[in-house]
Image 1 (tube, rainbow, N blue to C red):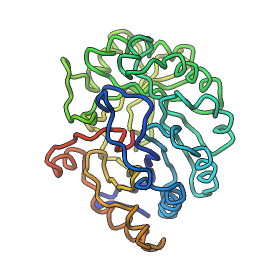
Image 2: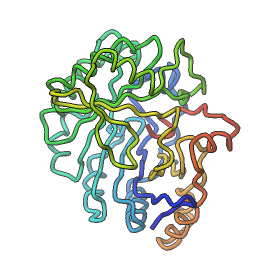
Image 3: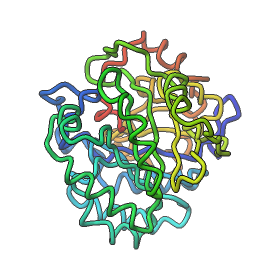
Image 4: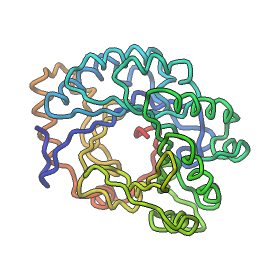
Amino acid sequence: MLTDNFGRQISYLRLAVTDRCNLRCQYCMPAHGIDIVDRKELLTFKEMYRVTRVLSELGVNKVRLTGGEPFVRKDFIKFLEMLSFNDKLEEINITTNGVLIVNHIKELEALKVKTINLSIDSLDKANFAKITRRDVFDDVFKTLEALERSSLNLKLNCVVQSDVNTHEIIDFIELTKHKNLAVRFIEEMPFNGKGQRSMKEEWNYNKILHKIKSNYSNVTPLISDKSSTSHNFKVPDYKGSFGIIPAFTRTICDDCNRIRITSTGIFKNCLFDNGVFNIRDFIRQGANNDDLKQLFMSIVKQKPENGFIAEANRNNDVSESMSTIGG
């Protein structure tokens, strides 16, 4: 089993399949985009499958596929089919911006995919275009409604941005009144290609929850898994639920069971670390599966106690894009 020096067992892999994205969200990257890597620098799908299989033999039973935008990578569905043959994986989840997924929902339902996290930061078409720098709101909302009708679990990821979409928090809560979905409000982070968080107000976990409770007097806490990244709640009699992810204030580190691998094979013990090993190069130099297992067990021992320590270890330089890391 993969266990770090703080007794935390690693069972969850976040795997980025590409650094490319068809949107240009303000909190993720500059308007001109980022310097994408050459395709030969990306892990191949066969390499991704192999890494995932080795990790699953060490106790990782859940994988989330991210990007960039996963569906912009050619043959992504074929990779999902390949991954679904891994009998040690209990869950395959996907984070997507929803622009390209709508015609694949039936295929996803037939695979081992359990949950889709749909990134949508505004329910207003004009504001959505301002945030994403693309006019695709109608496509994304069509995807939202199709996913809500499907057998897949649907979560909406909403990054709360000061003076941008905080006035829509209650609109998102109201979306849960008649729709069977879970909204996840996420604290904004500095992974936007600039390393700066420009805001008039600090919209952290407490402020977001206060905003919601000021509109609903009967918000009910839900029991969440110990390693859950969100603190979850429900408005009684509403069909769906909502949660808040303290991504920047980092009050969820004690029970962290996650590791990350970027699209170029950089292994990250923590979102805020600088990467601890290049798995792609290790594989291409001839490492066998036992070598990979020994490597994973060794580098997980380096997992920092929390994200603040990880950030300090890299001199507080967190200027890359989430599209590069894997959102």
